[in-house]
Amino acid sequence: MGCTSSMYAVGRKKKKLSVPEVVVFIPSMRIPEQSNLQRPLRGLVPEDLADRLSCIRNQIVLVAEDTGGSAVTELRQALEEYLSVLIGLTKKENGIEGLVEFKWKTLDDGRHETCVANSWFELLSVVHLMAMLTLSEADSLMIPKDHSGSGIRVVSSDCKRDAVDLLLKAAGYLEFCVRDVLVCMPPDIKEKLPKDLQDGVLEAISIQALGQGTEIQLGLAVECQKATLSVKRRLACEQLSYFSQAYHCLSGGDMDTNNGCGKKYLWFIKWKFLEAKAAAYYYHGLILDKGNEPSFHVSAVCCFLAAEQLLSESKKACLSFSLAAPVTRAPPLWGSMKHLHQKIPEVASRKSQMYGYLLEQEKALQALPDLPEFQLSLRPDDYQLPEIDPAWDSEKWEIQGQPLKDHLKDSEDDIETE
Image 1 (cartoon, rainbow, N blue to C red):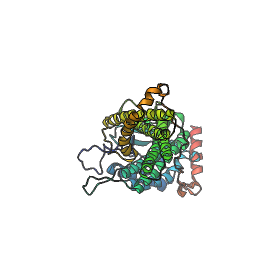
Image 2: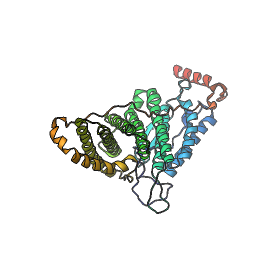
Image 3: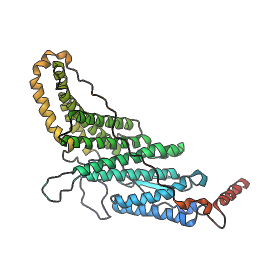
Image 4: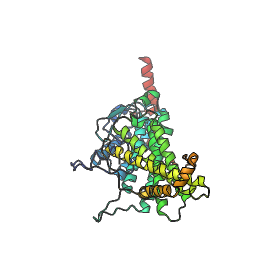
């Protein structure tokens, strides 16, 4: 599952160390730590509302700690319930955006703790966790469990389509974080954010999810006899575009790509980029080879040879990714790569021999053709926050015998007279 998967286990019992498979990579997963919500909110919101905020958050803390983030359904339900109550803390008219210090930590080692007194940080962290849990769920769907002992592992088409839906959902969460949450944070708060919550990293993970969704779609197209070469080429080129964009986002400097999870994440993007480019040149070559002119055949051979070289480089990138800490392992070949790892070297060898004489005669034409560009098909799901909990109707509040607005006004008067 990524940087988080090899470091935690379900429950608190020690489990035998194993190297996890990774299909959908998760750069990091952050979970909340115990934070005191009631004390800073005392006298500003009704006691039962502060207790409810604290209770739901503590439930999330306990479930996340005890299961290592594996109880996806339970965590998602608690997070969604928490969000509807949490939204009230972000409303400027309530004047309590920066009163509570929220604590979060990375799940892998728990050492990278972040404490920020801002409710928008809390909202960002909650939606980010929802995105990571959704990526985790997609990863689980793409790693089949062979309970028969036969060694045969098959992921059904339905599971693959469900995984694509989850990837689009995760991308939507992350797009929402960049578009609607980060922009609400004061600059000094944004500077305190950990690297994996910076906008460039969030954008990279969102685009990665779209790229992996396209990768799954390409695999489905390869398995479908009715899918044309044009469809397969288009999907491969789209996949290439997504991973190229993700790499560009990571290169912006928001994440340390020289160490730790940042370095591993960069290797993952490089691996998927090279695979996509190999597939794109292979299918482009097959289409060019249908032409009647010698130049088409020469260009096709150039595509096949480039695809073979890229495939070789992708294997090295996969190994570098797997060995980068924390150590993971790639799953057995699946989807389009299961087909292309055999076909690309075979076709490159056969076509090179078939058109060897043309390569000698048309040396001036031995240039790698440009790949076509296509409008990208997949888009993140549109995510909207839930409705604010009715308990935030401040007109009905009575705190210490007076409405909240009067309480806040009295507090302001006290400050002015001091």
